[in-house]
Image (tube, rainbow, N blue to C red; front, side, top):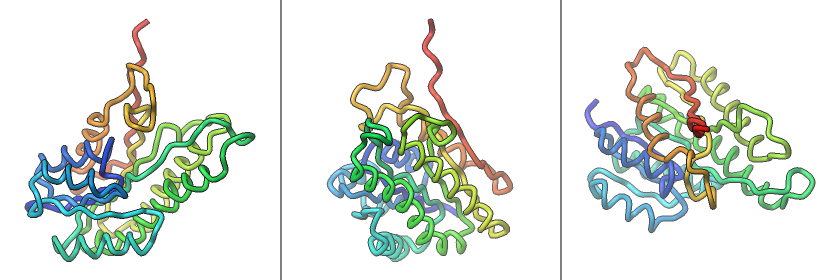
Length: 229
């Protein structure tokens, strides 16, 4: 259909904001969700205003807020065609021996539980539209990193992607895992010069959603090109 609706969590900065700009240019209407409503409103103003963009304050750890996000999206636009479960947070040093357990708790609730809640609350709308679900995994979810709870959460996101794909098999819903290596975002104080840019990941998302209906891009792993020695 013309002007399909694309919902993004964690949309206020980094990969989420870059993806919002890319898909808006491609003709999508947008539902942008994040805890930081002020940043969302600034972004929405540059993407077409209320007719094209709905902003929703949402903490993905809260199921009631996620349900309200979906309800607002459907009330405003009448449908949801693409959902990008992108909200996440990084870990911190310390490994399993010395990391702050409260940081772990918040990270697991955001990166795993929050993603699962997004899937749960958005699936009914995606079934109606035969839409597309995308999840932000990570290259860290494909390797073993000593002492990294963050890596463990991204392994879990990969598992969610695989498992929900089997649950919706035959429904017409496509499921794509977007798995970046290191990206120059607020997650890192001093990323290396070779780090990917948020726009690089946004192009990967756009590639996945722009394929013909009979093509289901299951995974896109994007790593920086190694520095020239």
